[in-house]
Amino acid sequence: MIDLRIRVDPFPVVEPLVVRLRDQADDPGPNDAVLIGREGARREYEFQGFSLALHAADHLKLDNDVIMIVPGQTSARRLIRADSQHNTLLVTEQCDQLCLMCSQPPKKQHVDLFSELETAASLAPFNAYIGLSGGEPLLHKRNLFAMLLSLSKMRPDLKFHILSNGQHFGEEDTDTLREIGVERILWGIPLYSANADDHDVIVKKTGAFERLLASFSVLFEAGAAIELRTVVMQQNYDMLAALAGFVGTALPFVERWAIMQLENIGFGRMNWDSSFKDTSIDFGNVARAINIAAARDVPVQLYNFPLCSVPARYRHLAPASISDWKNKQEPFCAGCSLRQRCGGFFEWYVHKKGFRGLEPI
Ligand code: SF4
Image 1 (tube, rainbow, N blue to C red):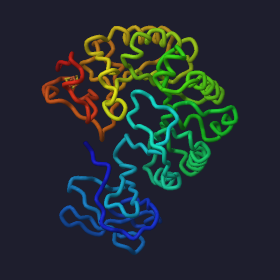
Image 2 (cartoon, rainbow, N blue to C red):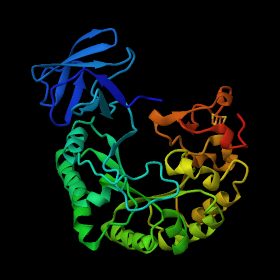
Image 3 (cartoon, helix red, strand yellow):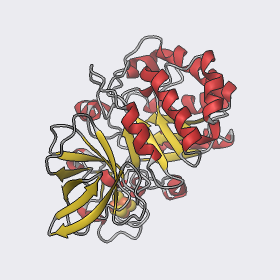
């Protein structure tokens, strides 16, 4: 697992400080810290006349990484790793749903870091693709849109993948979405069933399904790109074919439909025994859903599926979707011919409670 924190010596800040680390720079910007020395694990940077010292393994490349130093904390957060395609910024931990499979259960408090996140994104490498997640980012819609509008002017090369529960888009947002640039954002929005009651039970919010459809109308009107996301669980496995029909009929405009396996963390771990559906021994309803969606020209992707859990004819739909920092393979993967392109498992996956039908290929 890649560490997203770096130990930092005490640094005199009273507010969170966003810094880009540079191995060298002739003309450093106001947020740039430039490396001036290394001794063992200790790296010393010069930042606006101050000495900033980090402790990181020798092999760790930090050039152009963006970190945030928080007052009183002994480790800095690695917000942007310059050589990774898997950078995600946490916008808020608040959410108005309590989805059975949530990997990041919500908290009551919101720590507002929009200004810092905007600075971090503005310092990302050219053409970076940045994830924004929560909680539910649109609970802070005004600040979120203001940040995206600002970045669309400052850094038009950036693109974003934003996870949202789709409960908060209104007609009044259409112009703003267009102004931000619909080609700049892919909205990842979950739908778990074509049946309103079943969807609402899974997200634990009455009326969520209806509100979601209203949001889809707004996004469609604005021309926004949507990645529809469905986690396969015992609760919706038998409804997947019906959901595929619904997607093909009511939501054919989605960019893609991501059918996903469960992540064993947060509520997903708490509810694992009652929710995990072992698709390595029964893939039938997933296959049916894929076939129905394909017949209606809805592109499907399979996220978080180990390749050997997927029948050969559908494996091309399963990219290595698990972010590099939280991905692992199991000991039995060692001799597998698909190892290079398999997404493997979440770091916290527990094999004795997981897939029973896996075999190296
Ligand atoms: S054995 Fe491991 S590497 Fe091979 S397909 Fe299965 S999970 Fe992937």
